[in-house]
Image (cartoon, rainbow, N blue to C red; front, side, top):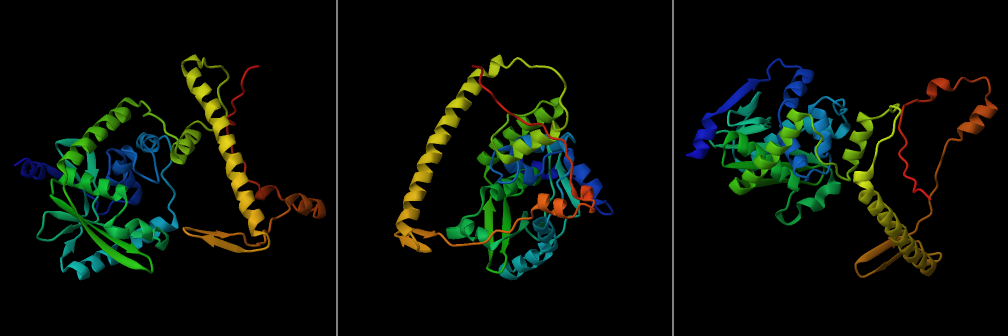
Length: 318
């Protein structure tokens, strides 16, 4: 009964005639399936802090890259392959889906299954990720994305079709898990409170979080000094970690040097469970100083890129 009530409360925002900029702006207002995994810490690509900053327009939209372009271009192919593999039919939903009971979320689904209360998520990935799909497994962020869609639509299952470029094609059926959806809904509710109050969520150690903070606060800083007494223990802990990292790095280097010494002139070595390569290679670099010196009449200034950055440095008082 609850699922039937959920499905009755689904509303649609048509995307027909909508520009990509308008589509991105519409998505910014609520939480989407690909962002759900980030919010619960299961995205390998982004962090809660970056999602928060994006929702508030504090950072520019991510630049399109080749992987994103290929994923969009091959979506139709993946959907067709899914139909061939399963005998099912799919249809596009040219709309962003919302649910009156879940005002902070939306679902921008790839396809819906004809004759079933189910959807399809289409993915394209590199052959380098093949091991992630061994023994019927698939990445956790895809699972969260599909559960998010079921949370919004009220549907009982979702299909995941993955094209592993040049190597394989896999189909997974993901059942609705109401316990996971309840936990996800709670996490998204908490996160959206950070957005509406414009309060940053807790930071983490990901590159995404680091880069987002740098993007928001890049450039010249205001003159002044902040009292860091509340974070003194964090600074002390950082010193402890730096010492441990230095010790572990030295131990790691010692082990590597012992292996190199044993290999001598050998390019390859192996033992049960390990293969080691110590191959010769060449590295080419451009000597800009020498070029400028030998070509004084060439104006190289247009080839230099200038950007404002803030250098972060911690120094212990003696």
